[in-house]
Image (cartoon, helix red, strand yellow):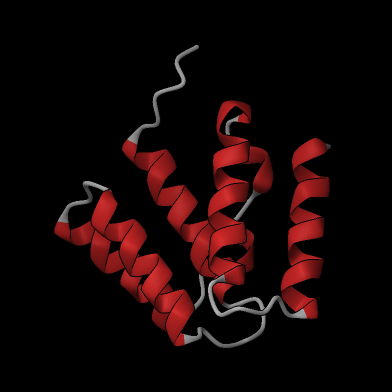
Length: 109
């Protein structure tokens, strides 16, 4: 199995990152900046980039983020990106901390 990450997985990672940016019910400017920096590193087409920006305006539906769909080989990358966005504003809210703990639990299940 290859460790290369396909476009669909990158887009899924961005969906998770945006979901966690919304964990405390608002996206802070530092979190928005973090997402923008990630976007600049990825080779998304205009439609994919527009989708990510939409997730910053309106959070993805909860049922659309399923930790069991994250490939095992990429789970640490997802966790690192999520940790980056929730700590981007210099503080981790109780909601963010709880959501991250639940994600880790579900990823290990």
